[in-house]
Length: 339
Image (cartoon, rainbow, N blue to C red; front, side, top):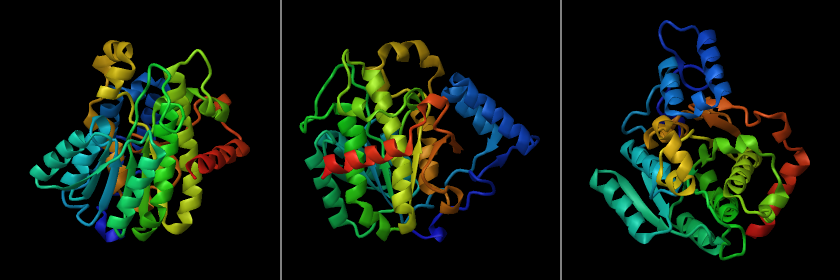
């Protein structure tokens, strides 16, 4: 995927300039104030406020005509929205999900609208199924330009994967790690290419604990395990960025804010009911994913956490910062489990 295949998204680190009447300093101050407020940042109001503050260019239709994208978790919520949006921009989208019927429905929806989509069925709770899917993709496609990990979910009770891992950790830490590794050569063939992981602002409250990932403590708290998995995603994005940058593959992780999705309804029903007026639409939650997939590579760097098209610190609380040895231990554990 050459730079010529990308839409030029204008000046600035994030491809945006302040709207007319705002100085760059005023725009940054307003943005930082939203970030510090948490509710203001994660809500639909925060997204719309930043959209007004910054002049966000959209990727025009056809800008991704030569691009091959794979999206996991593409049958619902943010993943489905991302798959449809990128197909509308011209990309060939590999729609990944665990239900053959749902995968087929999304593929039919995209192709019916004139887009290009192919289905890939795999249950990410199985490392074998995840590996087999990645190998099928690598065999069928000489290059992959964008790999997007959207599959997620918050369990309310302890469940084990077929391989014996806690289900949230299996599907949101180990499976994405395995898929990224198995597709790394295909991503290198598409360089400059990129990997994007959808995480959660819930990671801000957690410090990485490999012990908690290996064996979540009793009593089981699904939100705590989910937060740990999301922290691990952020840490691994930095590690993948370091490993893959010399090969022309950039790695990004983003959090979409609070988004009204079926997963939120199932995983946090009370939160959904109480916060529903403040939640983002799936389109608002998917915006930064689509932007990261289509923006010019020189605007993005690698290994960073993004929210609303701007890089953010993953450490809102000093106690959540992990040591280099802990990052290395997480990487080595993922390597051992997925081999």
